[in-house]
Length: 311
Image (cartoon, rainbow, N blue to C red; front, top):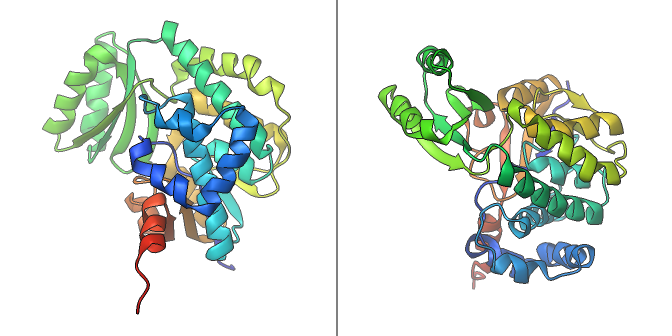
């Protein structure tokens, strides 16, 4: 089988102006995307992003989208990226929708801002005590026993993401967080970060319906021009209906990155371009042991751009 290539738009982690602002100001691909985003939004994205204090504010989310697509533009133009498939785990779905032509860029920008406000409104009154916690190196059976114990005690949890062997995202009520961290440590695991608001849990069906009725219903989603692999189960997405379902699934279905990896391998993909501010998907073992990974991120771009010329 001929070896194939995929572009991966990563899920969103904390990405402050102090971390990516210089890239956005200096990079010509970013500046071009920002100009188009400003027209779509009716305000200066850089100005709003500079003043944002929330890691997941409307402006931070749009900036992450813009940067991811600008980095893909750069990879296509300067690195010869010609992907056969596209993946957008979690927040990366939005960039995937724009890159594959399922949505126009301007519509994707507006949709991203509107979905950010939609989520903020939802979690202001619903599931206010829920967080999503990420942990690594947790042994499968002992950790499942701990989770079963929560259920036995009448508590609630949900697996919001499987990112690698022993690498999970778990949603719990906040009063259980300290106990979860202690259990992870006692098993030899390591607690990473906690997300507020939480993500990807079956309990958030109300958010899915709200996002569908108030935001997605107003946008025309087309068949993607490039085949997409869904981040929830690795299924292949080729139609507008499947694309719309995937975008809605992100609210109440978990990420399963190992299944995406298996699907890509089955499709003959051996090289990944990961375009976006990412310290996760390019590093997990199931990615690095299976693919030739080309990471295109703001830091590497700035290093190459600002490196002094050889005399």
